[in-house]
Image (cartoon, rainbow, N blue to C red; front, side, top):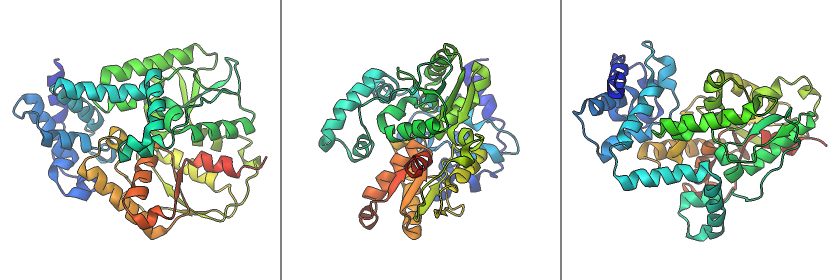
Length: 387
């Protein structure tokens, strides 16, 4: 079956019942049918059939989807929305101007290759010339690489993803500290390896499978065919393909919470308000385990969003090229931060972290003065860990 025919057949599964609408963050914030799951499905179907041509409006609706997959989880018809939106973006990418495709490919390769990391290292010294959103990202970049705590092939692989060594070295280092405290041998890949999530959800499905296969091959060269991830987006991708590529994957919160000695670890008290941001890519089990770990810190005061518009609008590449709905979601999130007045925000997704930092620093000047930290939950655990 031709690719377009398969896509059209998948879109026909949607009966346009609208049960997904109350669960779609971009629709709730915009009340625009084109920003809803069924609206995007209709647009993709028309585009695949040739009755709709490429346009900035179509691109905006396709790209603004944050990939939270709330719609897919509540759909009574079991419509494969994730596949539809990925294929729709891939189809649209094929009709973009060659310059747009080239720029998009470069942005992906900056993160997924060692030469890209070298360029980012150079750019980090030129922050005064960078756009605002790039400044926020580059402000976390530190070019020194994290070394493994073990060289044995029996050590478990800690997966930093394509962003860990670039934008989230503190989380990478703190994850290794906590794992080492539990006498767990950890190794970090020397080469830049990617799970393929950014590529897949940007319409580069072939590239995504190549990146997954490359990481799988690396794991199969190790005696321990297992990995731990600390970024929820990577974790979702690696968990989805673990059985296909025959490796074991653990989210770091699950791995730590289920360790037999975790309750024996001692943490220093923290009498601060900590706002817990739950990324859309973090499953309920991982969320529960994350909360279980944070409650090990004495005197900590955990705050939640009370179910109000959980999505921050980052959604992968939307962090770099946000649409109006994505920025409106961020504004709503920052308003909730202002209401709760936390000392620290924790998030298990680097995309959400950078997006929130952008909001905290540039949306509300009063909040910016408070210098609220946005860090990974494991970073907070590591900071409070008693020697």
